[in-house]
Image 1 (cartoon, one colour):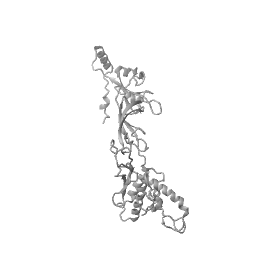
Image 2: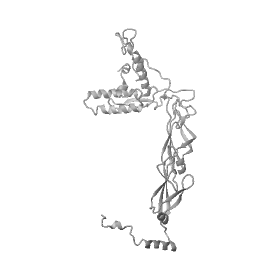
Image 3: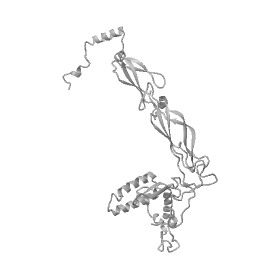
Image 4: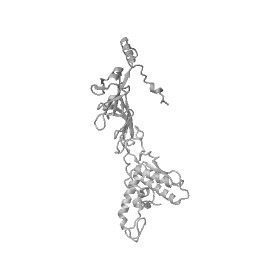
Length: 380
């Protein structure tokens, strides 16, 4: 099939996507259609096989940014000339009659590297996004609750300082990869009519080939760079949470955007407080008489002074009370609560007076057995 015939096909319609579809949307549509129409799943089904071939052809163009760009440009030209067909000759008719006759492969040549017509020569490779960088930060419990700005020493991949990222020795320049035409990607057959797009094996995805490598980076165009960054850890971050900072990763190539920085946060524990969502938690010891008779106790908070908490008479062990607004900050700017759980403390040793008082309490209960219901007649 000549290059000129490709322009007359609507690859977007074949894949069932819009013209402005993202790379992920195109890939998703292709995988779905390829799976549905694969010859292995549709033996002796010529219609499915034709559909599979059409889908593969469409994906081989639209999955490559460079081929897709050229395809869109030539489709636009095709549409512009669409109303000028005449009886003598037309699009795809080399040497057609009349002054309007021409070979449309002259417009579309070069997309698949070959065929008749004029091939466009590319003078530079496209921009390349920088790599993502990962690091870790350890902060205290209090810093995790309120947020903190921490300095991070970063070592990342940056353009080589000697060749400024070109990978070529001073006085020389790299040239566009002839295998992928600067796109950094190539399409190869994976068996039968199935094809796949992968990084170019000649330039290893860079789009450029270096004949005389830079002695510092050995042609990679990259080098290590160390820097200290001030990174803001947001309030309410949890232990093990991964934070993404856009554009704070390695610098891009040829004007490409920088990668992202991912920070995994490690939060130290606290001797008094814990976390339950945005709420803080604390366990407070109380005596038997405080729980039985009721009292007002002081409870520490993470921020500011203590708060007063009233225990009603007959408070059971393990009951949780809520101190409003004394927890961690929420996203809406308000604060969550402090959850206070009381723990009735049983003394390991009693003085004479205390022992006498407890004995008097036991006698006053007149032999009441709190476990009597466990052995009642209705128990099963």
